[in-house]
Image 1 (cartoon, rainbow, N blue to C red):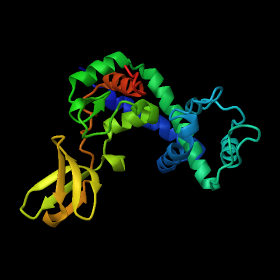
Image 2: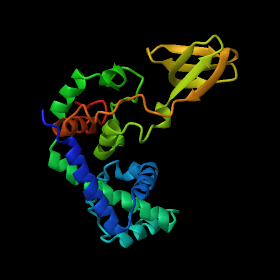
Image 3: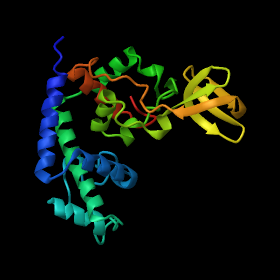
Length: 255
């Protein structure tokens, strides 16, 4: 099977870099703006920016703004007479959010061009080893993040990046804790809780373990994601299908 993914990704990267350069933004600006958006804006606008009627931030469709300067102003001082309040952002912070909004539009355009099929993506997910780490509606493992509502909190571009570059952003709740015991045994798992006497983890076999602190020689978080990259495992269409399926998972009624 012809693997077109690297070429498509290269073309997309060059296009996005060109777009950001036109506005004077850097990839770091986009990442910083994304963190601010998810923490402060997504509650009202949604992860794709389309929760409010007449506004679709993910496609750069706004009501009272058109230029980047307009957007910075709206983000900082709000829109009187509407639910959009003023925010205590510096001009730089507001500008990084705008950078993120522009990158959202580029992501959306590319995702539409690939035309992913959620049904095919679901079939691929179910035939793969995804469920050995993840759960969907109660089915699968607890080692990785529960994906039942992943489409409601993560955009398609972010889901794709997680599949291709899993080490790029490891959420704190998903980090693995490695514990080296004094008897030489090493245990790895997700930390659930800790107190003065023990550390409780969910190990890689989905077993709850409570490890007394006086038996621990050393402990540290694993910096890399346990999830492998799917860059060389999926072609462009398979990737688009899987991302479309994950983006469709928005709660208990997810397909």
